[in-house]
Amino acid sequence: MPQAFVLINVESGAEGEVVNQLRKVEGVEEAYFSYGVYDIITKVKADTMEKLKDMVTHNLRTLSRVRSTLTLIMMEE
Image (cartoon, rainbow, N blue to C red; front, side, top):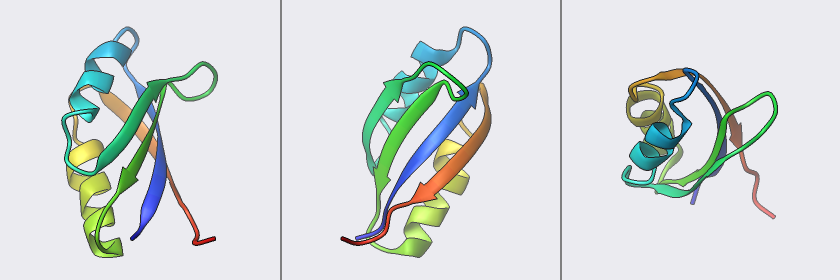
């Protein structure tokens, strides 16, 4: 099952709003605030790589107040 970490930058002050939105998206396993270069880190999972790509492209990157994302696909152990 494909998994990824998605690092997200949001508009200033929108961290709480975006984390709350993320936690409602199907396939989002975890979502946290972070300090540093990225504002939020989230772990996502999908049945196929195509579904994972669609989730990131259409469900995460299009959320209100998201400015940019960086997706890190996790490799199998």
